[in-house]
Length: 308
Image (cartoon, rainbow, N blue to C red; front, side, top):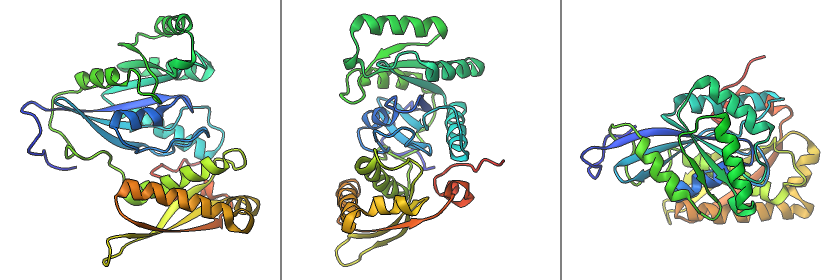
């Protein structure tokens, strides 16, 4: 943590907010919108956020530290259990909780299970109905009433995280809830995420975008080497895409290596924007069977390794 910066207000406020919801509710899209930059992976594939991404926004005199948690769902595998544990840990650490519900899916079983768990924790919770542009207004009002009848939400928002509608109202309310205290990060810092980790997430996103219909979500990307080039200020980044079977490796490589080249080109473009420098990206694909049972892989993703 850093010392308070010179430009912080005379009476600063600072606190933590956990964004929770079912997989694909739009949490990462909302986080990126709230912060004003891309700090979390966005993909059509469910359960893509694995570790808590700490992102930072400043609103008036408040610094809001967001914990973007993995989608909460019924865990089936060890990796699933680790992701769900990380999600609830974010809730327990937060000063306020924002529950995001996909308005198109309504109050389904996944959202009901989350609300039931929130009742046990008795936390201050705001409700945001997302993707409102896909649902008629009368249905939205009915959904809001149903949810509020089941839980005493402090306030309900109608938003479109993708288009930005209603997001400023959410940010203003969260700022008002932050407790008085010094800012913990410099005012221009957007995330507490190592660049090596962010680079790996960028590549993992491009893998999912290119192969979301063909590849299981149980892949991981690790940045093995990052070298800053003294001559031109560029970065040489070497990454490994780990898959669980040879058949998956062939899918990622593609015929004649065309798919891995496409993924690498897209990832490199994104990294150059994020890191504001030229990037030389080298991707390798390796098979690591049962990597989901390897404690070191969990540590690399910022997750606790569930035993048993």
